[in-house]
Image (cartoon, rainbow, N blue to C red; front, side, top):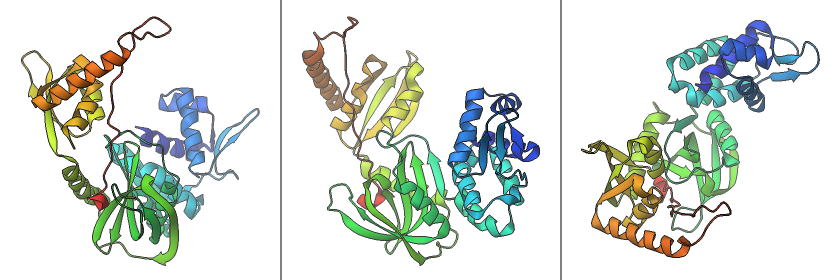
Length: 337
């Protein structure tokens, strides 16, 4: 896991003071390119890791040669745990390494570091295609850690943009789509960050609800979101070779078992039959819809339309082209429901 490697890199640099990408690669049994990317990621996140060129060069922890992790500043500690915290749950060794680094920090920095480690949840599988990270994510991370109110204009799906002022409690990275979990006068809400404009961090501070847990809150909110999105389902026979990729593509899906021919029986959920048909069209013969008949008819219509439009077209290499429609996904947040 990358979190393990990043923490191991820091601890190795703490012990040696300076390492080359080659030495790091040999020590961690990774490629030199991967080692260099990890070092650059730490540096870009604000961790005091610096390259030094020339004979005897390499990468050093802290520019003045100090190797004691207590040399971190408060902002550097936050940067480290914002980078690693979301992924610590991927393995017990990463979580253990983070605890060791936490103990090495000055006591005055630990509260911020702990808040940063809990500020983000990373969840696989998305509602719609992944998007680039919005610029506001960085500001929200620090607002969560510093417990400051934030204001923004929000364009909920199907509604006019409206101003919001909320108490930010955490961020969720759902396959590249970012959501803010916040406390409001109406209770906990989630907001899609890419639907926000005019984001402003305010000076006012707040205290999170007693016993708040970001993972538990997101589980509850995402369940509500799923309920607002699901209007119909389809049963699909999926080629086992593409099962994982298929489930990642279609979003909400449940494996029901295996068919007699070895294919996997999957129930797929969507907002409408047309949304399901568009989402499934890309899979062709690798995913056969068994029911409902309405989705099968829509797929047949999509196939006929594609064949009529592209049936005679050829690429420059002479291969016949094909295409499948994709649902863009609205990615409702609970505030939209």
